[in-house]
Image 1 (spheres, chains in turn orange, blue):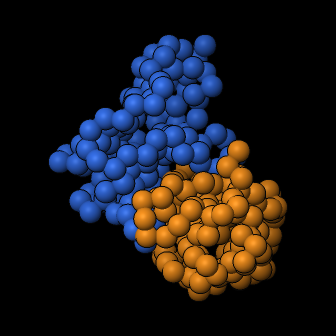
Image 2 (spheres, chains in turn yellow, blue; image 1 turned 60 degrees about the vertical axis):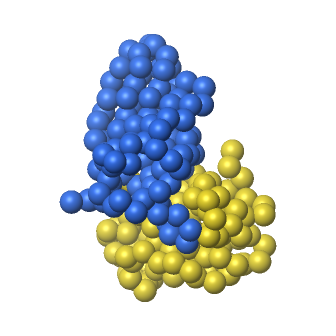
Length: 116
Length: 111
């Protein structure tokens, strides 16, 4: 077990709706990253938060947004859902920023989002 | 050309076989290399983490990095049915940057 928990495990939404996914990082890990994994693909980086500030973003539109809270929890929000947003959304935490340990990501089990 | 290339498989082997999984990459700035194992409906689990070229061994697993050829490998000795999973290579330039993953190789080890 990585100590990273995500909720819900599964979610079904319709196109145009909004969704919030939640993550609780491993205690002491002040960096959280969110990844999208489409079926048969590797995880794609969405964004990263360090001490409640976004400090990196992948090639995702602004309708993907996030928050990180002081208690090691975080959220991923997606507005105006599209069919292509159907994927496994993974939260990962790591110990720090800027050092080698930042590359050791510990993933949760993910939230499987289906958009109909 | 994708930054990281990985054969999706599936790769089917009998129990006890030596397994070789590979990735190639195009970005010479990558410095840190990882292998993750992902079981069905689970998140990736960090298996191996290497920085320099050469070999790193951990139990039945050996990670190999050849920066000059931009090629990394993961070897699994005495493979077990419980090793059946998707293996993802990942790499980063380090520091503030994030991970770039391969597509993953599905491995099936039959009893």
